[in-house]
Length: 122
Image (cartoon, rainbow, N blue to C red; front, side):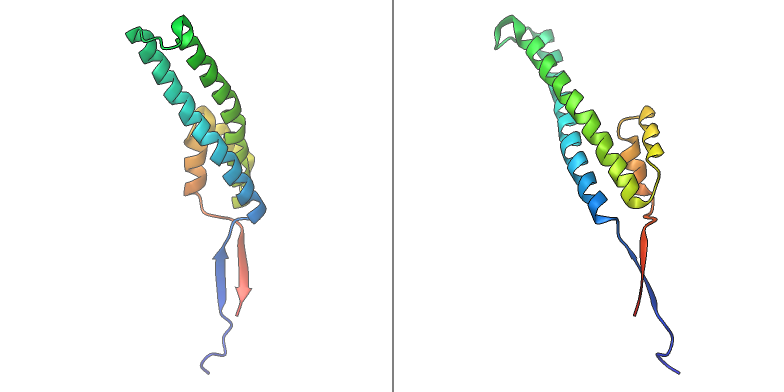
């Protein structure tokens, strides 16, 4: 009997609401963190080379901007990682791996398989 069996197809999909939250949080957090690193490097180079386009406060301005970027980027990055964990079916406790490195939770979550699988019958 050909074709009489039921075919089960696994579709790996993350919860769409959590996917949007993850993209929002990571889309804001990662660029701001990269900007923080770039401003830190620029401030260090400006201080070392004596380059002061804004007078004596150049290094201070760059550091204040960098710290503001860091203050905004970390919560939004962790929010995006938490949404990614929930969307893939994992506990948000995985965010504690941020102690090992800032990008560690994101790398781990992207490497782990999706636990939220929908079963569809054809």
